[in-house]
Length: 321
Picture 1 (cartoon, rainbow, N blue to C red):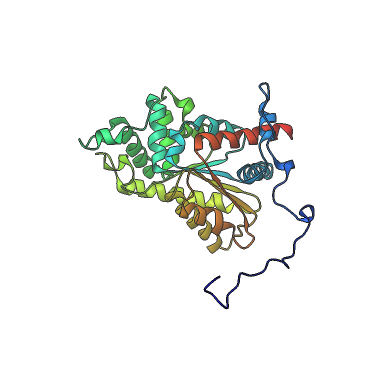
Picture 2 (picture 1 turned 90 degrees about the vertical axis):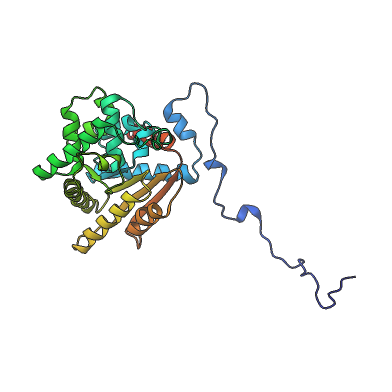
């Protein structure tokens, strides 16, 4: 006997139900994955993936990228340094040559890691092992290259990305085939660089010139804004591995374009990272595409997995078309 004299459990006798088959569901067996056979082609492997959640988003994004190429609209890849360190540079270079990367926007760490890869074939020092002695970031060649390029670029009125690409290629580095900076400069593909003064190791080298870094990076901001302006009616912007700098820069480009009275509609944006942070989700995926201005995607995963998968989807579908 319950102590709650006036309280009884609600009766379930009159709960209404419906036939399961009559309900519209979000997942069906037609969307399920298929087992992969030992001799499956890459095309068959991609087709075997479940058409659900991230795979569905990746396929939709690839469709928009191919559409942008067909419309001759910008396909801008915004990159953080981690993208270079995970070894996918050659994949991006290949996509560039296929017309699936028409511009690159980079934060300052991309310049460091890409230049070191080009010059000596290795990068990403052990910070814990060198910070205590003050040796972290002290590589002579890296600091001299980036700062001399910034100074020369400021004198010539060009952006930092173009200036570093020009200087690096002028060295005829041993591993230039693996360098995005070299490939973009050779192909005349715009490469803009957006630095946070004090955020990169080159900024405390003896040759550092804050005025030159500021002038060339500001030129690149205005170049990126022009590329973003051209995104109207079908362009694509991808933010890959930058949690703060590039999402902020991209958002300012968007507002600048609209402030000047230009339309920026029917655009596609995406954020690739192994965690989804506030700024990329807000400043890249959601805000620029709000109110029917476009579509945004968030692809979560490690770059060494997601970028090759996106490239495979782009290339295989392009061949099939």
